[in-house]
Amino acid sequence: MLTSEVAVILAAGLGTRLSVVSGYLPKPLVKFEGIPLLEHVMSGAKQAGIERFVIVTGHQGHMVRRWFERSSLHGTPVTWVQNDEYHKKNGISLLQARPAVNEPFLLLMSDHIFQPDTAASLLRESLAPNEAILAVDHKLDCIFDLDDATKVVCMGNYVLRIGKDLTRYHAADTGMFLCTPAIFDALDAVVKDGDCSLSDGMQYLASNRKLRAYDIGDAVWQDIDTPEMLDFAEANLSGYSAQSQEEVTRV
Image (cartoon, rainbow, N blue to C red; front, top):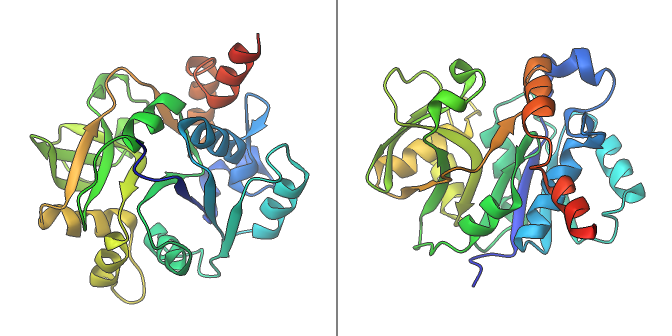
C-alpha cells in the first residue's frame, strides 16, 4: 500500500548554472533525452503511483504552466503554487506549498532524474507521525561531481547530519523525500532573515531523530545543475528514465 498519492515538486529556482544550455527557458523545461526535465519527473512519479501534484514554480513560472497545458500530461491533477521569492533558498519554495498539502507527500526536485521504481519503493515505506524519509545513495564512487552533492551522515536507519559542506559522510542526498506536514514546522523553526534551505529543515528533523534514511541500493539518479551534469546524464542514464521505461513497456 502506498503511503501517499500526492507529490510536491519544487520547480522555482533560477537555474543560473545551466543557463548556457537553457537560454531563455526556465530550468524545468531544459530537455533531457529530448523531453523537458519536469516531464521526466512527473512521468516517473505517476509510474510510481502518484495521482496528484503540487508544483511550486517561480522564475518564468508562466512558461512552465503554458508548457503543461500543451503537454501529454495535461489532464493530470495539478495545483500550481507561485513562489515570487524564488531568488531565496528552496526551503522557502516548499513553505509556499503548505496550504495545498495536509497529508503525507512525496517531495521531488524538478531537475533530478530518477528511476520510477525508486519512488515506488520509497512510497511503500511506513511513515511515522512527524517524520520524513530521505532516499540516500551510498554508491559515493559513482556520483558525478560529489563535491556539489548534499552529503548525509547516517547511523543505522537514521540521518544524523545533512549538508553540502560535510567532510565526513556515508551517503548522498538524492533529492527524493517522503514527508509528513511536519516538515513545514521544521522549516518554520529554522527560517533566518526570511530564508532557509530544505537541508536546514531536514537537519532540524534529523536533530530530533525524525529523519530516516532509505538506501536506494543499485538504483541510478542524477541532479541536473550544470551542462556537465546534463552531458553525464545523457551518456549514462539513457534507458533508466521514466520516458525510456514507458517506451520499453509500449514495445
